[in-house]
Length: 408
View 1 (spheres, one colour):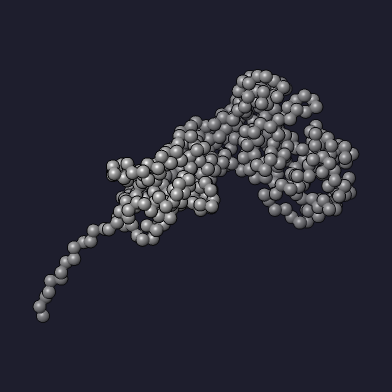
View 2: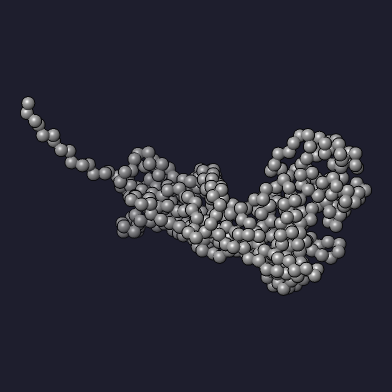
């Protein structure tokens, strides 16, 4: 039998740089959405030739991932949480007008690939870059993508959300978390990765003297944000003391006692949301002048519902938050009205547990209608509408109502 030499087939050259029809179609759909996002006619994309479209697809972007900046130590559970939140945001939140249907996941991968490929196409082809359609789209890209003002940048919502998550898991009396953004090429590929680098900053503290006692306090800050240093929360003096004309900057500090009181009295709110509500309340800086002439800061949730007050003192251009006072306290307007309506004193309210948020979610007010009316009269009924972040036993729910009826 004669041995035949097998004919060698020359290796085939890759066509279209591995661009499949599926990817081509996905890319085209997303590119049109990006153009529409920039308030242009998405049909402009179809004015480019198929070859030019392939040129735009040469670079690919992989979904962002979370890493830790070398030298920083962050608990693994926090890293996983941020990664999960990042993924959920990318998949379920839309860039710009929701009717366009461009998710942050598509924008951060195919959308960024289109923008990069579009710019590269113009850099390599003088005829294309001088065309009217190219100039029209390129000018919009400069406005929406390359804008140095973050709030005008299309990725601003994504970046702010990650900052919000990091603010929630930070420890104001220990360390705060921030983020950087880094671009790197994936090894042996034409893919680029835009990754979130988590950073850690040790919290600043100082001692202050109040009522003859030396006390430690911690600076209220947000972590690093891209190239920015940690953001220290502050406000003009006359924002805090509205009767003053002084506009000097006042830096915010909080003592451990206040953090402990927040934990005790807002007992159905997670540590994450207590952090978020604290920083957001200080950013808003809505103050109230009491009958005594002193000012307190309103502590509100993100829905604007008042949960309590933050008394403070100002020493040497620093504002020190001393404690957290619930609405039920007789020294506050709501608590005073409540005590008058029920003919009770502070100790009675504390005995019933009305200085804690769980009371308002753990009581059958249908069984104590006079208390319901008193809360409404004292402008405190909204506390019953705050959703608890923990489950409570039905037996306790029943016993609490009986106890109140017996006492009041």
